[in-house]
Image (cartoon, rainbow, N blue to C red; front, side, top):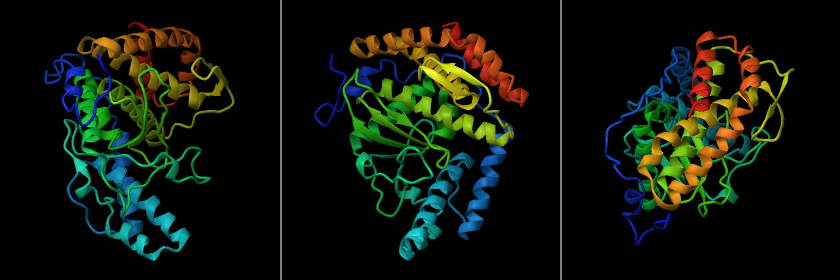
Length: 323
């Protein structure tokens, strides 16, 4: 069974995820956090005020928040470059032209683009390259849009609909690779709600990585919204990086990887062939890595001052430990 698909095999994504239209039959993880919702409203309003932007079309608060950051970063980049036309475009499009870019998915309208990885922006503001929606943005190919839509559906069916709805609004699909290759994905704090990831043309695998990066976006917002200042004085060993990391990075890993473990365990019955084997091996590997973090995770959680957030982080870590 091939794990790839393309223009000649448009039915392949559905074949890779059996029972894709079934309702959610697993416990839905609660990602709602009142301070985060308030952060989204306040931050988006402030950005629109700075841009002196008009009213945007009705969208979810999290979507407006995500798109506003693209408009803000785009306007700032244009201003630094003295590009008046681009600056004016972003002021006139506080939603970064989302109206003509979105595709329908089960978690709401999404923007799926496929920027050239070698042509993305680099600046001192980010350790990793990034892409801004702008006047020249084109949607991804129809195949990639379909791939992403089925991936969002897989994540929603596994109980992650609200996470993907609020924290993976823009998906930047980068390099197409083969199953088993190293897949690189990331997110950046200056573009919340945006994820960057390689993919293998398989919606079950792509959903895993969308959830991983959406998890990072969620935790960044949650820490900011609850005003949790994590001390950087204490270091914790990260089995994923094989090195000691400050509490912030360690807690991020102990949140995002367990989320992908829970997703993988729930989606495995819907997969077969090489995809099933790949995800089974991934889950087994993650079990071993996560088991080594038990004691340090308890110590790191003590640095999270918001009790609700601390409990959310603990519960997901505990659930993954018992898979």
